[in-house]
Length: 160
Length: 166
Image 1 (spheres, each protein chain N blue to C red):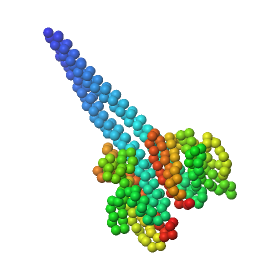
Image 2: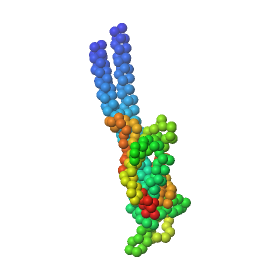
Image 3: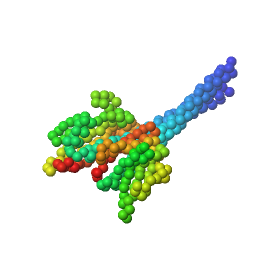
Image 4: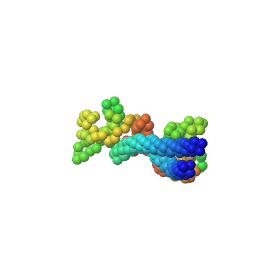
């Protein structure tokens, strides 16, 4: 009888301890999964944030640097609007084309009026979408898209 | 025999309970860190979006040739909050995805942008000062200590509107 009680007590304690241990393991796994999910979410957000911020500020800085009379224009390139910045070095005219191609923003520096292949440009940044709209003669809207989220920036040309 | 089993079990039980207690304390600290990390990233995203919105408004205002055009743009696109002499404050509310909230339907408001305009002087033209501020209505949990509106981005700029037009 005493032995039976001992066995029951032992079993109960063992099951209880194992149950607590199971809770501990379950909570540990839950915390690890939570941390992993949170980390990947933060990482995705950070990447998306970087793409949107850098793409827009890159184009904005390029335009602001070259905001001189008749230096900046928007032209169609392969069915999409592209920024064209005209520059003169040693009397020769050059153009910098900034355009969206193959889910990335490209930049191409060439002689003025020269034709080029879209793949020849230098890749600046991967983005899911990049559009340029002309709102007014001196006002452009740039929209960058990354991970189904988009953000826009309106730029005013002081020289036009 | 009975005593030996009982003592061993109790020690194990106490050990496990202590482990759970320590784990609970560590877990609470970790949850706090997770929350802080999540909302810090959210704040970074909001700062970028707020910056773009505020800059866009400033660029839009600077693109106008006359102060009347600028006033018309603000009246049409913002809600006039306050007029005080030469000073006017306009406001727009946005939801959590930074979509503009319709006037009258402002229960989903998460952020707001105010545009404060004031006339500096009028002579051969008009010099206007614009203060554009983007704020979050509720503070960020885990990272914001103050309970007031949390400022995300602010631009102070001036524009001279000449009589000639530009």
